[in-house]
Length: 165
Ligand SMILES: [Zn+2]
Image 1 (tube, rainbow, N blue to C red):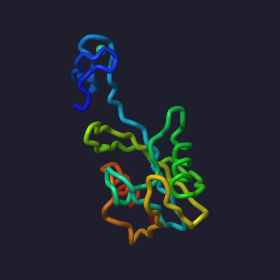
Image 2 (cartoon, rainbow, N blue to C red):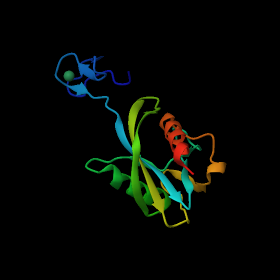
Image 3 (cartoon, rainbow, N blue to C red):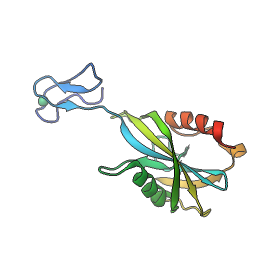
């Protein structure tokens, strides 16, 4: 348990049956719901985009592009924004692929994620690597790396390989 005290009154927090942390004195609940992320399976001429992580967790590992959804932002908007920021690409979302549970490892505050995954297309090949990304690259199915960041991405690629021609 990462959080030990109530943010409102400073009393102790304890584990509740629903997985959240409740204050022993006031009504405050530290909700531990998963944080939504938008993840892109972005294709250009049947090659799939991966971005290399510039910082921890998983610094130097390949990852699917995307990121956390901001307040009052849809997952689609978040994905389009992240792709623009990280790679300079203007993507077209083709379909919703599914939702996946994940773990975001952190020394002080490990938390669960709910990954909203979309298949998208790019009409542009040229890639940039900005922001929290140190490299970006298109991969053919036969060259796709074995090692990618995050437990959720392992599940996503396993499912995508079933339909990736
Ligand atoms: Zn309290």
